[in-house]
Image (cartoon, rainbow, N blue to C red; front, top):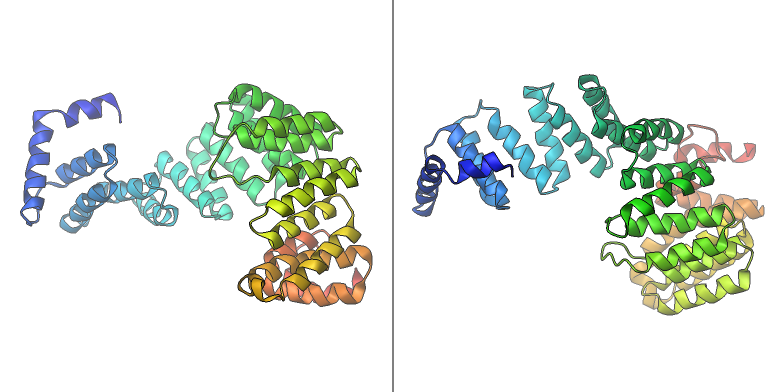
Length: 381
């Protein structure tokens, strides 16, 4: 809340409006007030974090003044601030119908669309925002992020650089840019960005944990084993209830990248011992072996998962687990040259989990082919 807003909310004029509104509501009557007055009341409630009260005042304003634009904007703000992203998209579109050159509305709808995984729509929204303000920093960063989430990594890199040339000390942008570079296998450049991001965050940034975790990955990829392990140790100092990290699996991954299989298995065994979801932990370990090109070991693990999921104690998880492992099984059998098994599990993977199937096989089947079309290309790969 800005200082002039606070001054207004403490003024006699506004306090009279608020008193009249709350009195009518308390006695169960509908307040008949000007639209501006109702929106001021809603704005006041928003400043106090009373979002439901703000919504009720806004709904009343819309009922009394259906042609007014301010209630629509207020409703969009309420949903955006409370992170109800899909509702925010709906109302922000209504705002933009009224005011198509509202730069803040374009920025907000892009944020909301990204949160809803509507990346193509978000990219289009950034284009409108940049058409209005070509040098808007937020729009530059949003465009980079949307492109990255659409797996257009080279284009995303260009826009990350445009943003970072103007805001070089944004550790969150450095982190996302580095993450994007990892998909391009530009690990040296990504690692340099992460070093800078970690220095800037000074342990205070909410992204510090992710910065350290990503740096452990890039350090390992450029052959710095001890630096990778040190980064994991630093990550352990930051607790985030929303980020579940299995450090045994990550440490095992680093050792496996450096061909220290026995040491890696020690950490994987501890991860399995501590796991609250044994089968999914096994799947994660199988993917690590895949990442390290040990498809024989990965195949053995997914075979064990497939056998285990038939046990009575895992029946409640069977659908979830099989959906997760079928693309992995298909990919492992493809890599080990077992064609019959590959075809068998590919069919299952396409049916139950086309999204992950496409992730694993997008570079193997023809560019642009959809998972449901993969079986037509079996004999050509």
